[in-house]
Length: 253
Figure 1 (spheres, helix red, strand yellow):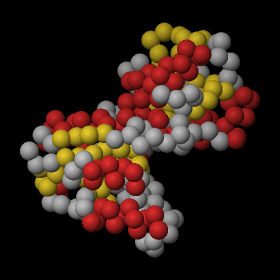
Figure 2: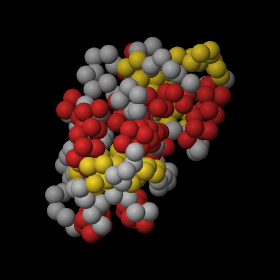
Figure 3: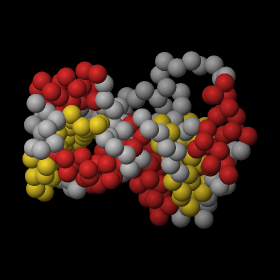
Figure 4: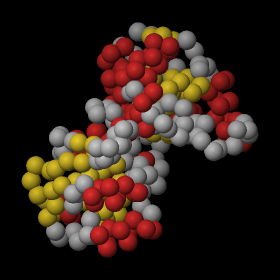
């Protein structure tokens, strides 16, 4: 059963509390297509391959974590940006994007979903003073070897994670923040975490981990942020009676 695009967007904006966030891009409806949505495609990033796949399967709207119009990017519509927007407009395809709101949501967020996949149901904000609530911390039900935790992360993401630390030690208290959140490693340290998991790693992250004594796992930006859009898409399908399909366009970063 089709639903009105405006109704769908209003529902998402309210549920994800978009007004609470100071973000690097606009959250919500970024490109308006048709007035009704019967089929929704979700994906991590609104790249050309995802848009082409959405058109091919007859979608009315695409919802992603990484959309367009980022702070500081060139405002001109040329090259790659022109082709992407041209695909959306030519096919009357709407684009919805939720960045930090999708990271932080306590049920559908990337961090909440990733934590549940790790087996951590009792999750708290990584930084209690961070009003945007990005990042989480919690404890495994029992201590495990770091090597086993790394293997679990590999199974979840379908790729080999980078681990900085002694894989023979026992760990239990875990902090994590999906995507490009390696800068939170010192917050994880001050919060009492034994391990910090993020998507990406920087040169200085390795030194902090080694010198401060916190184990670090980099599991991939794309790989750690595949779960929020899927959770939201399934919720929308059951709530509004629309068809949902998640399409994964792999990215090794």
